[in-house]
Image (tube, rainbow, N blue to C red; front, side, top):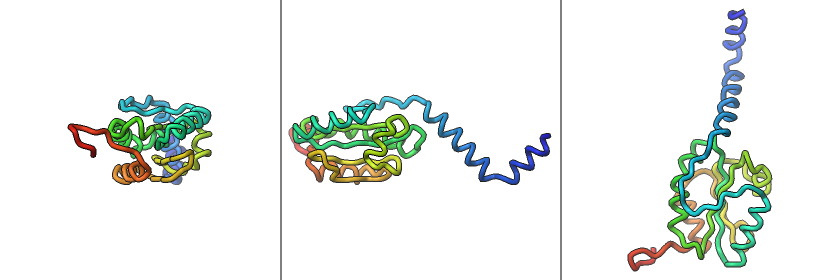
Length: 158
């Protein structure tokens, strides 16, 4: 019996690897996402997204959305930096949001997310920028290019 199982596993290493990855992905998806702080709206539905986008539009704010997955290593690396970034820009100029692509599937299709993490920037309810993958300088550049202002510290505007 064990010889048969071993023969199957040895003959199908890619299948074994794929099954292991799927099991790991399911396990990771059930792990709680740490709260890194910041001023980020954690979106739980498409309706909440539309409401956030409408309120930001009425106030003339830029909206940044982070599409992440709990099983995604680059998403985990980006999360604490994104949280810190949310505190570096004024609430009057920018709204930071995020959603778990495995929990809010409607958002994933609505925003045409094909890779994680993906950061999209919206102004006047329209997408004006997109960064697939985590590149802090690119995300900052997109945010600032479309009107987000940094918090003034020590008498200086950054």
